[in-house]
Image 1: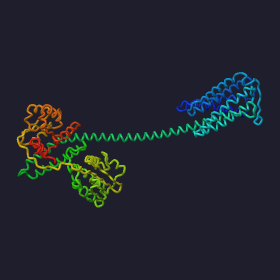
Image 2: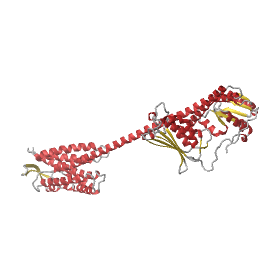
Image 3: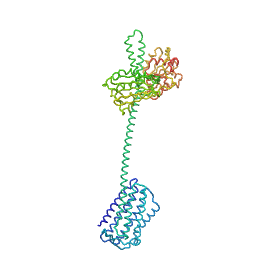
Image 4: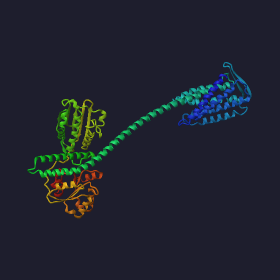
Length: 635
């Protein structure tokens, strides 16, 4: 087998493989145009395979050679027609009318090649290429055949021009197609002219086919690499987005868990507060009653001191329950008043003095500041939390003479009041600073903190319209700044009692409605001197009031009771006996439902908070029995 036959076989094999690959790739999205290229490659493979017949060393019949010439010519026409189509669809364009006409002409010529006498005369001739040592055995061409053979290569000028234009437009890959087509056109034209005897040279169209096909293969490979890189970038981008979304979901889940824990704690706070207030009511009430009865001459001093201490402890529990309610509901159950922040800070310093002395030296830089609208007890609680945090931030091993806690008060340029608590403790990392005000977050050992101090403090300060800022650096210390707004100009707030209410007259009739018998008995003792009747359910109270409600001067009713609540009893009385509704006063351990909380907000002037004390009951009796002038008023 001559070397030109080997070239033909190799070219045919490569082109056939490319045709199969192109057909497979054409099934992928965005690669449908490769179906046309599959026709380009398979027709090139057919042409190269048939060329082997003309270079075979054995004798071939005229019939076989004529048939081979017809097949070759058909393959060449189909190949050139396929290139006309491919160079358009490759870039997403439609065929022009001229190109459609050229395709039809080429297909017609390919079919005419099989008509006897059109291309070959029936004789056989040998074409020797002396410099290459190659002999081609080919059928003798007719005059028409000599004219028709060069036509398909001439049509290749159309895709050649197309690729030249795309090269000038700097379309990726077009320059490779243009160069390959220049080579292909020259080699195909060489074979057409050599076959008609225009000059002596070997047939090089097989090489031209291979070059043109490989240019497309190179483009396919480049696109595969590009798509792979793009897919890799997309995969990385998707991975990054998945990580970000996963992190967001985790953060959202953590936030939801914190919110659920806080919500549960809020509900628990309200419920626990209500349960504590009931027994605390009769503890405080009975202690007050005992103190009042025993403060007569001759009572042993130690007994009075013990009762006063017990009463003080009960009062402390009452304050804790009140703060628990504030935490559970996020709003105070009493009116605010004009408060001096410096006095609240001094109260906090007195409460934390022992803790501070053991840890650090206290520096006070306190300037007079305007009063603010706040609850002094809550504001003191905020400062106590900050002072305890500052003291606990200073290691005990440092020594009280080395650590310093500084408190400052200033009126800022924008009118706000600033209270600062600074320490020279260990400081707080930037990461922990972002979580300082989260519930349950603490940097202290488990036995020293619950993680609620700063969270509750921030809630209290923001309820006053203020804010808390923190500046800290590891190894240097921490400064916590409480910023409070001044009261609005011209505002009128509660300043305190303007007079002492006169004791209500004796012999008033009161109805006490409470399911807790001990609370009811305590109220009877505190209301000594009046005619007090007790009922232990809402239904019993409704029946009693329907029977003889007008005889009662006041109805003290618990808000939350089983069966019929105080709210439901009040609504029924408003409907049936509206004149009696104004005599209702409610006693409550705190709203444990949304409805009860809203009821308290709507009827705040007629609600007493448990545990009760003598002063609160005296004010209510004075107001309800003698009218507003006899009660404590707000100016």
